[in-house]
Length: 489
View 1 (tube, rainbow, N blue to C red):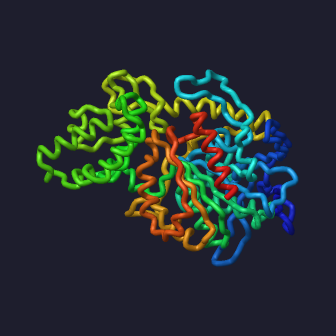
View 2: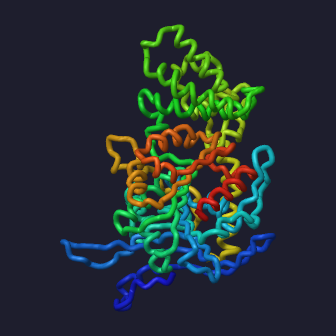
View 3: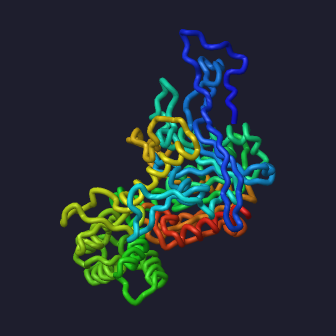
């Protein structure tokens, strides 16, 4: 992907700064094993993104605005007209793509162990026999201030720390890559996780509405298309309470609070109760009589694995981070928000909230070590600046486009499904995910205004893990197979 920004321009003078150029390092690799011999090319580094600039409505050129970090894998000697290409990112907002890159989809993956059997530093990095590279070329994208992505010298990164500019920037990277690599005629997919699902839908809609670029599929891992479905910041937060209860029940089951019952039985009861009696009771407010209230208190407490006294004092509304510190308080443990299977010691016994997410404590070290080693030692990157797993510069994310209303991109997905009769969507859910609860995501999808034909193009998959299904080995293999089958179409 050669950079050609200066064609026809005079060389810089001593008084001018040279414009940034693409910095991509190319290496060649093979993945050898039973049934998965792959010879592929990897390119990693940064691509310069430009914007059209105008002064008094006069075009003044393409101005460099960002140096966007990417790592791309292409199968050698493949027909690009037949070979799919997948553009991949995580969420946050403010997270690099390291999780999907080294956890699930890339040709190398982290070997960190799992709950109860975590590997010690310096962890491990192994071949990924289930890499999606079997089915498609892969382009992993780090949004502004994450990974090695930065604003150009003299630019302001915070201008890109918001919904609109983030979508604009990622969409431009996809357009530019497809143009320079001649991939407009390739089958194309976007794969996003968490906030990356918002980004995937919005990027696909922007590319369609702005450049008429159509996609074959979207993979939404742990999706949250409607923030209002899980937001506890509202005064009543009734919808969030209903949508989190099935996740509370699933996690309580995992930690032994529903002995003699299957996960499926517990989740089914919680979903039925949340959508009926619980919804009604929360809507009644102070009009709920004492007997009815006590019945609901008892059921919520039993399903969530909490005491009736706690649920009563919480006014039937159990907030998710507080749930993390309350469920196993008798054991002195806090739960992970990213993955409720993980636990860690409470920093003090009567803490209302934990001081850190135990699941993040368990996984950030292995992934950070792996990406720093991998880019430098195996992909030969010569970038010395820190690889930001989480963007330290992202202090506040702007949602000015949604001022006065919840962040919701459901309408954009509906528009895409109407416009493109071949667009398919895969939605993945984790039972133990307290970041994007599965009931909220499923409810959002169920309320999409789609015809039966359009709805038939949406597939669902559930995993007995948290926000990142691939942290559990059996789930990782099944998740990889599901995405591969989806891309094969």
